[in-house]
Length: 82
Image 1 (spheres, one colour):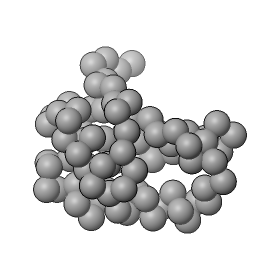
Image 2 (tube, helix red, strand yellow):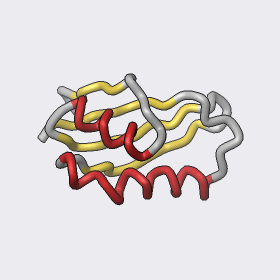
Image 3 (cartoon, rainbow, N blue to C red):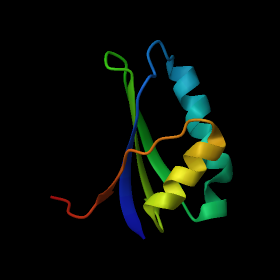
Image 4 (spheres, helix red, strand yellow):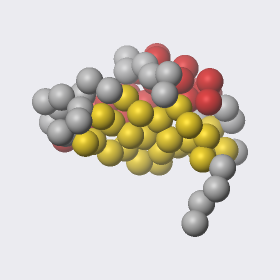
């Protein structure tokens, strides 16, 4: 399985509880695409959310986020780690 980092924009004013709810929406259906979302972070100043996952493909990550109600096309495969 590959690792991916995806980025969502427009999350200004989101509370930690709302972030957790969005993450939970992904977790409820992630197995249907063979995806596992490991962590999610919020940068409240920029309104950006970052999600770390393992998945069979970038497209699988995008499909889960789309179905959970927070689509993104900004998904990056992480090919090296230090």
